[in-house]
Length: 434
Image (cartoon, rainbow, N blue to C red; front, side, top):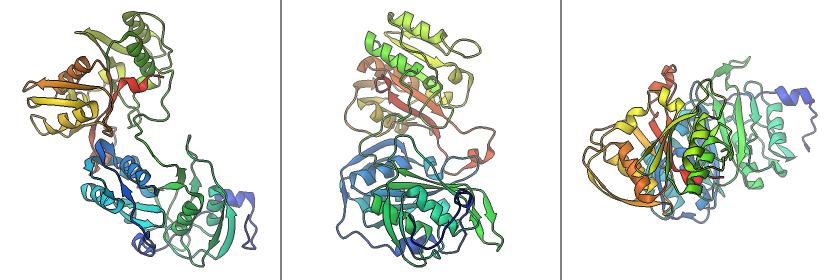
């Protein structure tokens, strides 16, 4: 419900656009008040996560909302997704934790305001848009996030903004807002965040345009609400419980046989192709089960993966991994000899730190939580990454799922991106069981 005394049509609500301006993010952030009491976070350990995950975990543990403002360049994902975090954060004030993340990545600036952490990526800071200009009129609004965005667009003319619905994230809450004269879009979204107790994520599109007055704008921007990441998120929320990888996890659990899967990602995350193949678990012994799953599907050749038995464990290579040479050199890298005692994420960190030769390929081990299968290994000098991972499965009695992630080689911009990392997501297979 709007009390601004102005009516607008349904068509205008859908197509109105944001005007551009020149006010910078630093000014907007500096105007916010600091919280009266410092918020603290417990010790957190990241053995290879993307920066957005680390920021969400820090915000949730500090009992603060996270408002994330980033740029999505053409041919790339959102810019902060490209930063990798391998870091132990000690317990302490949230400002110190954010400072550590900023120092390691150099990727963002941040501001603490009331109960919100406002983070803006360095890449988005380089392109001032209509989100930053302070010229919105005063108004009294009673709106949800979609209605707020429509009201904002009514006063803009150069940049589209739409609300992106995220499966599993919070519903849109109606709040009352007293909009001060000459507010910015960012100011209104931060006001909504405080009132609705919801964080949000802006993705500024990387395509530049100008309005009739020649003012700079960015089209196809999106804003999405998200809830707190209050506990380690070890798997994608959108995983398929009836996928091939879930069925293999079920076979491994039922037969007490470690299964080690190497797959390739179609989307740049840690869902591999086998997480898209739909096949339920047949009630057979382990060899019959794995063989049936390998040949039951819709691929052109009829087979999803190749597999073999190796000294008490089953080794699975998806057909997509087998056909794609990029990323296979990661598993063939030699490591220095030494002792290891710990969990699978800790092993990922150990393998990254103990390569015989420097390598751009890294393992993303996720968050170290102190639980999960463990193993003690005496690793011989010159062992490969793959052989060490297989030894871990034998010693711990638990298999794993490894998904190779690399940019599309046809996209030169992705290859040359200064923050791009190459490697694989490593998770315990037991986590994929339905």
